[in-house]
Length: 220
Image (cartoon, rainbow, N blue to C red):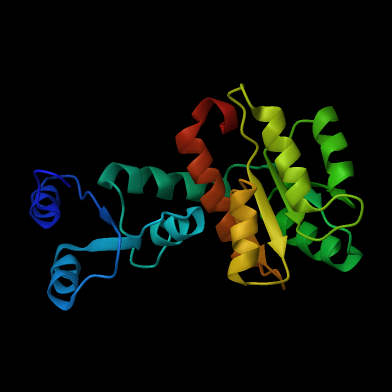
């Protein structure tokens, strides 16, 4: 940046109270010395041009620390509340009956109420008729898949304060599937075969983020 040495600025920020984390946006890979300095300061780096998926992966990497101490506490409390005390009304769009029963059973054991549809078009109809806290959709369904359904939901939210939390359920853990999910503004995804821990963790994470962004819209 003009007028600043970015590492000196990062060192000043890292020394400030509040546990602020730093992401450096760079044009090319760092040389050995600057890479060591970034590691010492706890800086995570991301290459330009900035891609949504790359940014998401950096923000959710295992080494990612809290943005602030207070936000960590809020996230932990929200996840705990969502996974435990809070009972969500969840719309599940899945065309495979075995997966319907499995995912419904998992979510109901967590205390949530689940309504099942067979495709994205039916899910859109259900959303227009009933209130839900979260939607979980298989990526590949007949009539209308998860990506198209998600795009239609997001279009309907333009100009409003509404944001329906959406989790994609995919049979593939490849980067291309994740990229498609987040380009469609999906909030999260779970890879098949679905486990109780995976879907429970993702529901908790997604709802925690939505609670922080839109407390009045998602809190009961």
